[in-house]
Amino acid sequence: MLKDGDKGVVLQRDRETYGVAPHIPCGVVTPEILRKIADTAEKYQVPMVKITSAARIALLGVKEDDVDRVWNDLGMSPGSVVGICVRSVKACPGTTYCKRGQMDSLGVGNRLDEKYHGMELPGKMKIGVSGCPNQCGETSFKDIGLVGTPKGWRVYVGGNGGTNPRIGEVLAQRIDTETALALVDKILAWYRANAKPKERMGRTIERLGLDAMEEALGLGGDA
Ligand code: SF4
Image (tube, rainbow, N blue to C red; front, top):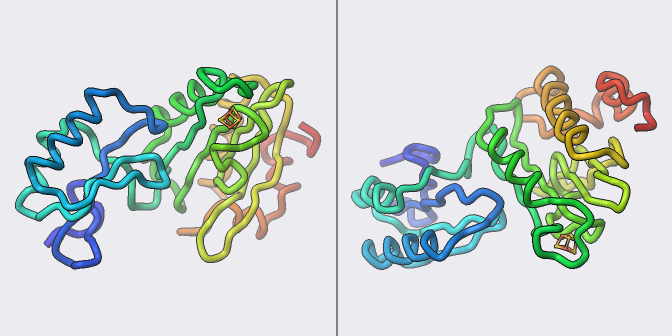
């Protein structure tokens, strides 16, 4: 029997079959990807294909004997669905398609995904990017959230869902894209240096204080 994470699978409720969720950066697919997923699901008689909250498309109920062949037919890499790492980067369409977009959330989301998806950290981390304050990327509930405004990015830290949900706090605002990306790098370094094992960033901030975080990042409390 495979364990969660082996070969990129997650054991299902029946304790016999597996979920297979390929990595789909920022949830953007092509007709070819959809066709490949549909063909694979049909070929291996996968009982359910589900769009997940991390904007992946999961094949659920895959038999153990089929796992290698399913991955081979998909020809895609696994999404980081388990593990103590950057699990997902969620981004809305932003200025690429949305009429309300103020900033390029999809472009920035893809850059963050490329750099950080699957990166090991002290705790689980989710990142969200929204093109405007409507926050369709659920940015306030992410460990790191970037929100587009007419004056640049606003950066939230310390949000999470789960059994003890938390809304993130504003760490910086009115910053351009390169400054925001550099800040994400610094936030991750701070988190790596200060978090206890398995501690979500919101709890680290509660324990040490947002002021201390701002000071360590050189933001002086009024970035
Ligand atoms: S957050 Fe704003 S830019 Fe993004 S999809 Fe929603 S309304 Fe559009």
